[in-house]
Length: 346
Image (cartoon, rainbow, N blue to C red; front, top):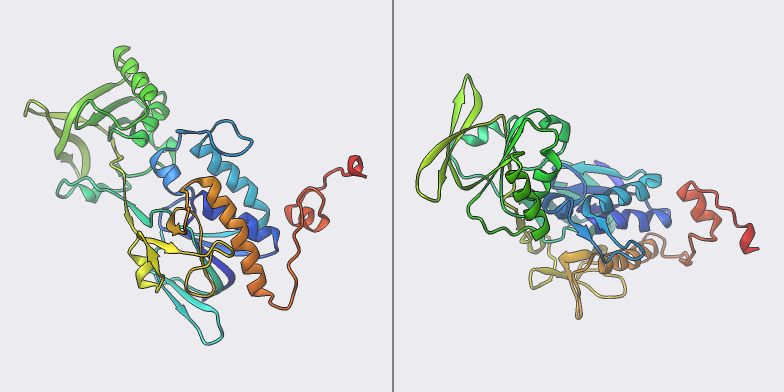
């Protein structure tokens, strides 16, 4: 049993910023995430896609945003629990909550923040009988260590930003790259598609239209794929690693099982505390709903700040919660581990 002030469910940008806002108020947090890494859908779907609407940052990639958020929360030493899905949130007699994951991890927490975006997400699998036996050895639905694919003959499946972004990122270090998509129409950014076609024209990679219908194994290893092209002909393609980016399958149904009132499959919250109908359970980011809600990262950051102050008041009901500024507050400087020169302000 892990005892903590707060459990944050979801490690996307909003969940990560919630760690920061809680940390400024002296509140520690554990973070539970269904994926094997932080960043949520930003990293899973479009790691290198530019984002233009983060205040004071004219342009940043999704990967860069997550890296910056991880650096920003580092002073607060949050504990992450990856590849864990929250199965139950149950109130206890003392007003706290018992939170359990599907892998048997248990938390005794004073508050919980749901920051799951579209819900706990899992990659959409390649539907070829038996090929799942190679998952995490030669079949991958995410890239967690780029160097693992260096020098390999790569086949990448998909037509969205994730597939095209990883083509761009991996082709310089791979022995070869073949991109396979069911058609020549892509869901990715047009300039990335143009770069991919230019690489094909220069013979740095290959693009095929079609779908994988079978695989070839030898001595227990995946050595090839059988690809049916648009003309119905099945061709064999040799490879070392197969990377599949068909998108993610969200699961928002867990909110109902936790007793959370929903609107349009999102948790209904107030706009003062961003608390749900269950006292002590909050929700921020794309997984919540209130009149006028806008699904923007910026909005989620605002919600995280107000939720943090509400949680502070809940944890310390007899203590007034003062607003302090990171520019001038010695207490916040100490928590952040910084020593700014304030002489110009005196």
